[in-house]
Image (cartoon, rainbow, N blue to C red; front, top):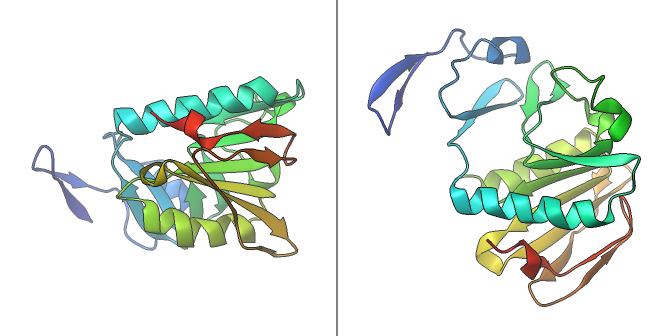
Length: 192
């Protein structure tokens, strides 16, 4: 399959054909795009913009202030959910002991929290597809941060096999959270 990269107008030939697997993905070119999989379908996003990266950093700082010593935060990790489902969350919280032993990819059982920061190119995917995907993978807590809403923090917690309706915290309101660890934060602190 060939794609045209808009910034350079050059053709990139992908080394496999759909439906893709995680093993196929490992053969893709390192071209600055973020490649993810949903049931073998390719999801492609551009590299995060500087404001997006700054917001990720600000969220990590807020998490790091409260994270207990046996846990840690990481950004842009590989998450293999199945052979045909693979995400790269903006931020995760995992047990610290896994950092040196996990290898190239985390599994969904390793994550206590997955965080996605919205952007124009990923908003619908983060709100619908990834909410369902993280719930089906049984990730206990999923945060969706929407920068264009002030920012706003949407907190989804696993209730059985699905997430219940999200708790929504707008900039200027204080979120008092208990999972995956106690944290009090105003989403305004995430602003770039």
